Image (cartoon, rainbow, N blue to C red; front, side, top):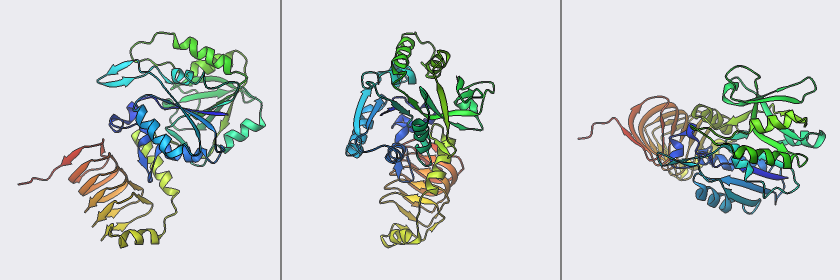
Length: 360
């Protein structure tokens, strides 16, 4: 089985952070999102598994990082999705379906496991792969019940459990079973699947439209093929929006098993001075914190400097400098400096500067 991971898009909903890096490179709980995903996959796939990344925006950055960190475990492959054009110097792409179409020359008579880099199961994909081994089907869709189905593609099923409809971001309620970042396409329908993708890719796009995957799967359903679901009951983290990123941060931090000796070692190194830590908190390498209250649910990147701050429910990037900041439910990008500020829900990208102090 091949793993296919489309990650060419810009991630507009995660701007301003994605102006300078791919969405999957945002760091939470000491690791980039892509690290969390690839480490989870190791629990379900053996060493040497083929994995194809469809890259585009910041593609060289993505490929170099993954090669440097995962070539010892996975058999890595990369292919670039070309943008349709530029808007304000930012590329835009023709959609997920056209990205997956690029896998056609790699997948030869094998099953295909498609995953999205902005979705992460809190455990792993065991339940989905168990369904794959125990049931006969042509396409398996990983789903989960959600409170806001309007943000997702959703499916509805008949009494036998076969999918009858798949709709992308419905304006009216259809179902609360949301597609949750993973599909298995069996080799029994791979030829049909890629032919439909290719036909759709030839349809002209206008006004920011994209070629979507849902109509392709709906065509396969309508042809009489067996499309089923695997409902995942473990929480699936969604890193596609700032508010869901903070939710994901809380869950990743809850997995940490940090004991007092960890913080004692930071104190001995001089990295924690007159500071209270309220777990769970993840502190990156070489970061220094003084006269502050940190936590709960705070991720701090590498080489950050934090002085006289009160932080909770917040993600702090690498090389960030915070002085006299009180905030909660905030996301602060890499290489940013904030001074003398009391404000919740701060959302600023990399290399930002904010100060309210009046310097003489």
